[in-house]
Image 1 (tube, one colour):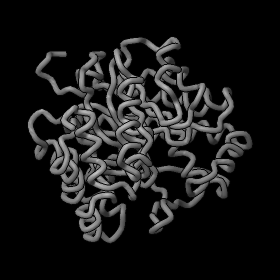
Image 2 (tube, one colour):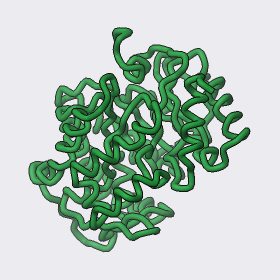
Image 3 (tube, helix red, strand yellow):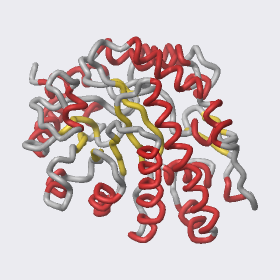
Image 4 (cartoon, helix red, strand yellow):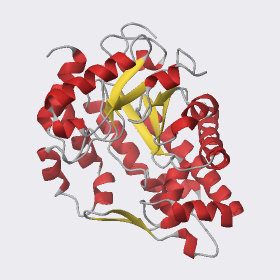
Length: 345
């Protein structure tokens, strides 16, 4: 990758940069007062996600405030089941809701062609965002990993994943087929984002925690590998960041066996654990500041940033949080974080 390329993309190809590039998961979100005002313009959260104009404005808001090194598409992982014909809605203050699959005897989904038609506003948003971004700012596209999306579909909500895990044991053929469907449509969804202008991609595995090694292989590794393989078979060559939150000791297996380009590291996983394993020294790691430090601020934030920078030193690193920014974070603390990382403080 040429030195003139954006810092994020250079690191994703294995280059170490000092200071590291920084972006923040959920950087367009409720911690920004202008986002809260923008959100009022849509009848529902899904309407917001399907509005190219509103999604574009949401993406640009944090970039106007902070010198971040990347933008990320404003959307939601649950647009995929919505596109597959499953009813999805959001309860204010509680989160997403779906009609749970586990109460249904037979599971049926709309075909991929119809699903992509429903997702067309997302790809229009990517085109608009790409055209509106400052020169040299890469755009990250994303999707939810098959198991994480399946968890919501099986249970009808997030929270404790016990019901989804039970379904994996009780209806193995149905769950395995669901994961295949999600892997295939997600690959198509990501590929369309890249065709519309996304420069790299992230797969969010938010519910990787609490799985035995056998279930982790079956529910996380296998469908994610299928997703990445399908994506590559479509001719999509951009870097892919995998983020298996809560994978713990199985994070190394994920890095080695799924085919992702780079690894998102959650707050609980030390960089030394990954660098000390078999993970290629050239694989970029992304993370992993505790999001609560953007609520607390002050000396705790400054120490946290120093610790993360030091722990990931001497290898390719993208500075990020170990999970998404919370609504309680303040713009002032985010500004301080970016200044600290970039060495301007």
